[in-house]
Length: 252
Ligand SMILES: [Mg+2]
Image (cartoon, rainbow, N blue to C red; front, top):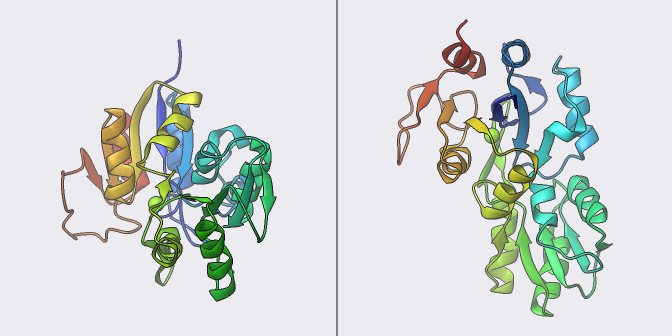
């Protein structure tokens, strides 16, 4: 029998910045003990797979590299092997592009510019990315999250950087991450028996669930605060945190 798979977002669900969200590691253990497979699916394209696994393990969550998928790998699906890809993103995107067989360049002409969240983004990087797009490169964004949750609030998200490159170049990007088609394709390479999507952002995690035709569980440990109204379709489960979602799914 194939195990049912639960798709679990990372930022705002398992951790917030460099702090684990209390109860999450134990909840994931219970999920596995109940026979569920887990795919960690994040729109944060900056960390490498190994970095995500190491962070999970540092918070007491066992995970294999195969279980962790990000918008970096989804973006790489939009790049052909052998193409020159200008990196305007973090190391996770470099890794995914190299795994794909693309040639990663830092400046100059390119076939495609890939924009993702990275704290080194600055005016020079914006200029390089803009010029490559003006020179004919396609514009790909790993994700379009406006913000990124950290312990003391939010930071600008990957979508904010993508918007700058898009606006400066006049090009409309193709976006790879949740809830868009490339990451759906990436997920389907791994599993076709998703039972539930758990995430803190209705516009990405919730829409992904709808696209997959499965229920969506909102957790209020990230972008949406406890008590805050949710715009659009109401989530199927609306719980304070991951532990409470797991209680509802398999019993406490
Ligand atoms: Mg999140």
